[in-house]
Length: 397
Image 1 (cartoon, rainbow, N blue to C red):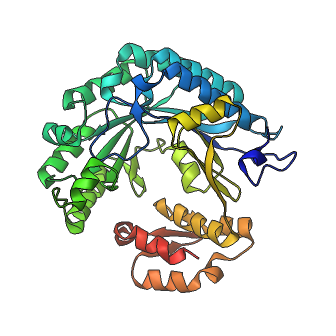
Image 2 (cartoon, rainbow, N blue to C red; image 1 turned 90 degrees about the vertical axis):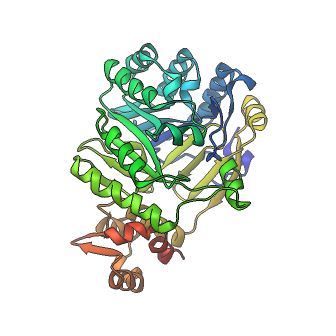
């Protein structure tokens, strides 16, 4: 089968995918749905985990047929969800082995697995480590018991601590925690306590996200009907600034709007996204981007399984990006990185001088104190971080 059968514009006879830098593998199963979540996820019991893993391998093989013979080893594999560790460990190991046979990872590459504290123990994590996984992303979200319950999280604070301890005992040296601020009723004292407890653990990376609700989530529906109250934008910004200031004192580099890491522990996988690189997403509702193509898989579990089992690409939507959009996305994705993006690389790639192309935007944003320039780099100021979306909008065609 060719990509053209899903009306994919790269699917001409003999079409070859460009160099793929990273692979995202979506595991759409969770212990239960959290109150803030609108991700595509299901209870594991509705489908065999092994059956879904087999379908993932089939999808990856469809793309593998279109790879360039000179495809290099990729930089990263990221197992996200959902909760990948809802799967039995043997299923994840099978999947990782099959994926690496088709997309080998470079010697200095990164293999990440997201996990929920209640789905792993030291034995499970040791098995992952021995199979080649070298980075864990743990969905902690908060170190406040009350907030965890209100979010609908199944774990408690002690479970987070135990998971980090088990991960270290299993040999993991690259451990990330997810944290959320701007929760309903969250106080500065609660957030300060969460930051202190997170950094007291032997973790190397923190992803710190402001709460954003979709109308599809239980909390989103509550906010729309007035039964749920959220902190004001100013209050959420205060919590964000608390994290920025405190984590700096603990040696964490604020290298991306929502991400902090100790030196040498920046996320390899996410930097492919922020540098507008070529990545392939497989699994239910997974997104991909390469060259001028962006596409998303179907979010129907039954539809995904039936298409892949029939040897068809499970793509639901795709679009061909025009040159103006690609340039704009390169700019604002690069601006997510706190060290900014390289204007010389921009000119080399597009044959256009950044300052000539976006002079009005640069002048306006510089006068507002939202961006700054240093030699060949353009980056956000501290104020620009808080108003990042407004900055990005300036560069859209």
